[in-house]
Length: 424
Image (cartoon, rainbow, N blue to C red; front, top):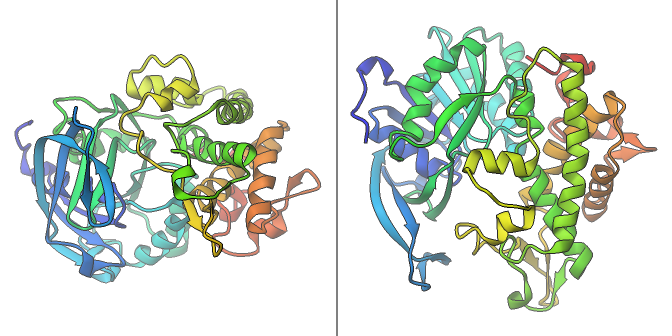
């Protein structure tokens, strides 16, 4: 490990949310010398000491059970332990002394969390860094909204593109597993000149310090590069749609349910290729509209996967079927009253990746005059599964999308009605 850097680079970090990433961030940051607080709806479920095991896949094929969840056996390379100074559900307890605030939760919960914590951001600090570990859905628009509403003038906004590591929770509130960092990590920061400082006090301590110098962070020229590239919004809906097309989205028994990645098939791969082609058309229109921006990291799925993982996969299907870390993830389903299983339409694959993913790309494309037929097809299919109708007469139904606060993450939800104003 790198030696602990000077005290000037040590700060108070408040992690908001108890997702998989929180089980990595807390030990990594605490063991790097930072004071770490946690804001969670379940404070009683968290231990004061949290451990993250750096693991590599074991040659043994047996499974290990933690609680009611089975995990693949693994070799533990190193265990990193960290502690939380404060754990609370009340933002008044854990936000005022924070220099860095980082969200670890489903994307559709970001906006509500920001509004809960914004009143407690310390205005006397020169800078408070507010960010997320996963940069889907125009995080900058959300933060700028609370800056306006609460008249905050000292906030630096950041978003990490893809979650920096493959990780999972082994025992909630106590033990996480980290299977390694991405080779290249990308983040957007505004004001842009704050990237280097954030790298010193935060980014390096969550990747390169613990992964033998790997996982360097690079700066994206725009939050929009992340919004139109990060992969969940492309992978998850396509795979669910492919499973619905092939199986009707229902299975008679639990053993019949395909693995989400290991059993990735040609139907899902074709869906993903068509969806990413629509996204590429939108990205091309953005590049044309903003020729002064580099958009180096606004990439199609396979190119982004090759850059971040330094992989050489020839096609989309191989990138999933050959992944040891993803192999045991099952398709999210719900058990019906008759004992059969169906796609879980209440999960984040539907609540995050449609209204806070695909619908944003659809709005940007619409404003630039780009047709997105396969995006439309999946949005309408997903809407039919949940009784939602985001589109009307070939366009986004703004009345429906904006009738409830937080229903969608399209720019008009934050008062942005001119597509030329979507960049910082």
